[in-house]
Length: 159
Image (cartoon, rainbow, N blue to C red; front, side):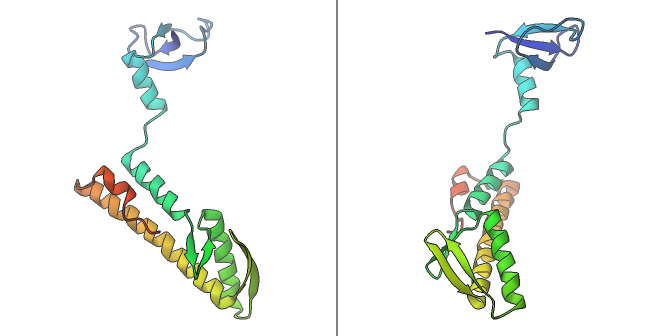
């Protein structure tokens, strides 16, 4: 199936745009058709849709571990970014008022948390998140040192 393109110059050196169909020559000069395997088309695709880098893959794996959740004293605690913000807000209230309590929703339902427990949860979440970033840093260092191996990506993350 042909792919409609606009070339960079009359020599058709490279592709600068693609279209669903032929365009008005007055509006879009130097048009043509190529097949998907054309090297110029593949080069164009790599510019407009770059492949994720190893650093991107490591960061994505870190976020997966970061947002996986933890257990604090047997209570499941969400650790995605929204939950981190909510926990930090509750921790600030608990820090300012040691008599503060709140009803906290977990995967198992609501539980009443006192200030001491809220601070313990916030500390555990912060430690978990930091451990995830530390692991990402270790893997990035391994990449820099040339010692990274693909099987390292799924090992060593905090649970």
